[in-house]
Image (cartoon, rainbow over all chains, first blue to last red; front, side, top):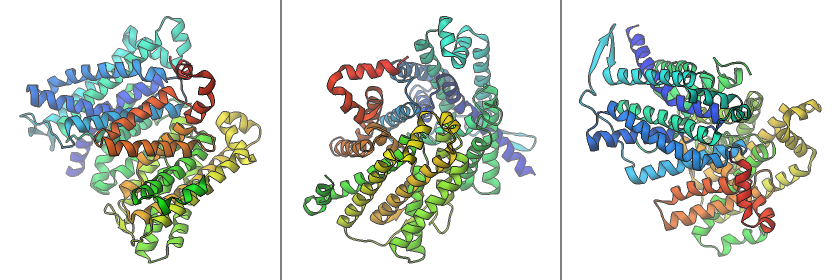
Length: 287
Length: 304
């Protein structure tokens, strides 16, 4: 029982981070109808931004987070404005393939620039932990979880309460109507993709703190983000959070009771099952 | 053309023959993807599963049971076909992105399952008996590509093919006309599984080594799609052309600029999608009378 409790705590802490990873993917998918295969590569870039800010400038990883977000926002904005906007109305293969092409470019440029070595971000408090109701809680993981929750809430607030947020939601629902009300889709799409990239940057920073990084982590993280997006559905950021927590817990429990090599079988098995049973996500609207 | 290609093993260098085998197998895979992706319009990411199952059918039969290659091939094709039909039943009901992601998920599940199977050598993989004779592998890959292309040519003018195209163009309308669209989609899925499985079997026997990571490699599946789309998805020779051109480009890049090769490959993909979104086949058809305006027209059509 003690062990299960510990596993659940681990799963929940990891799940918050997973949710943040998926959040940017879901935003871009829902608004632009682009399934961004380069999302994991953007997370990887965020992790390296944090690594270099930490080792080069001695910046605390949690202070590096906003910097990484701004950098990734600029990159995302430019990519959407000058590349993806050119093909956004093309058939789905094309949008899938072009993001795959971007993933290849980013990954291998990263390999050349950052080298293929494993890196870790180790702040002085990396080993700190405390006991909560009998379960050990690592401090960095708890902080990462808190930041992930905060950003999810901030995105929700942004989409619900601000003018730009409303414009983004309107565009997702009906592009033509949004244009008639004066939304400039070129700029808005670039802004949305930029925000998605910034969220990926934040997720990457946190991932760098809790785990090892190398230039190839992107593809696997894209896969996980997919699974969460499908489990939660594309409707609301709160659903993404639930999807992330669900996947985190399921992975932790699987690793304990079936074996750590089976976590991928279970998480992608759930992905396929959910798609077959309820293609709009477990929590999403029925189509 | 085919006859000329068939003589390559007699005059070509060892490197050329090996490059040829790879290119022919990739062309076969792109062509088999063309059936489900190009004609039916379903972006499958599960074709690498068929390829892997073909390879594992051969490897398990030969290594674990000492059976001859053809029996292994039959087992591999059987496995892939059964997988396509059984999983096609639920998965082929999904559309668009959801189909793509479901098949991607299946590919990940299969990789993970196979790397846990004792009989498949777990993560370490299996080593097949060594056979010398690149010429033989070249000829059999070529024969496979010819058969696959002939099948696609048949599809493009048969009732079956028209049914697939009808699904691609407007699935609801096709269903209203009384077509059993699910059945046709599953048949298309099963048909492409056969070719991909044979390609996987030949490749495994040639390389003499198989592990879950390379057998079920999703990147390979993406390559099939890129080659088919680059050449022209839904045309008879487009995927073959795309596979040869892109294999050639990446081979030359790998020889000239080793570290930058993959980056250039990515840039080629991005540029091709932006400037020639309908593939080489369409480019050849329209470039003559449109000239440089062709690229401009493409961007104008799809930009926002």
